[in-house]
Image (tube, rainbow, N blue to C red; front, side, top):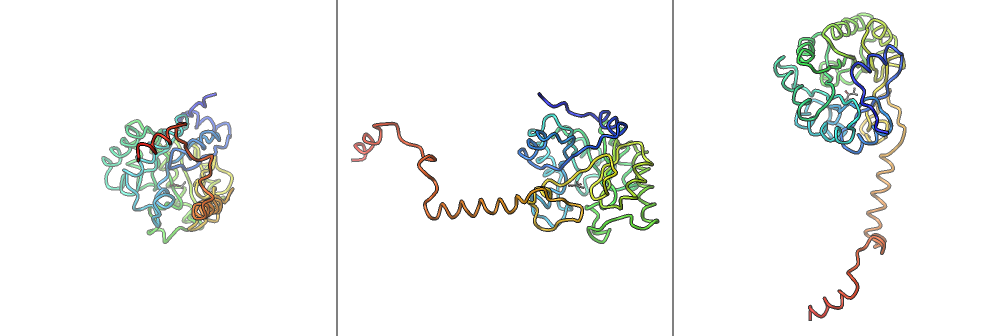
Length: 282
Ligand code: KIV
């Protein structure tokens, strides 16, 4: 049976029914296919593709072109899943006009269902304008990797009362600006709970405890492919990194010692044609 794609309204109703949504990042066709088949409620084409696909140190170098290109592939793999495009660094900070234009590119070229923007009160004008142009927006506060330089690294946020209060004000402003949901990253569980209870829109977590309306994880983290570092909040469900290395090593060994390819991997000429060819070669 073909899966029914969720709408923004379904997602709001799921919060009201206290249903928790599992979602995940994907950057390519195959991962998106598996995510849809596994029944993920949403897929984020995260700018974490900078680290997971391109090997950058962070998300800052990621471009609109890269995000659009990967979102197109993900859409082809998951035609019936609610897909969120992650707006990369400097695609929305410079002006409200640029933010709306770049959000529109995601919609028109990659057919995503929503956009995600990092930042609190400082991006609320952009959120309002994108929503007014007819596109659903998810906010993202806490550890916001695009501004990790300003935050002093990839560190948990909101651990003091004052810092938590800033996050709560940001969350309120994002809801007020018309966002349909909010992602909170790497913040204490207690602060996530307060934000969740304070807002009416769904609040999702990554590294924010188990009390949110759902969880997102980076696919390369839970598959055990991303080897550079593992944040505290990641659970590795598999070690595909180790398995991939094993496969590549075995393949290289078999090519070197002539074990691969075997007879069953080999094409044959039509019967009698080899003899004819040998005559032609004389
Ligand atoms: O880009 C990303 O992967 C994210 C995570 C917080 C899920 O934004």
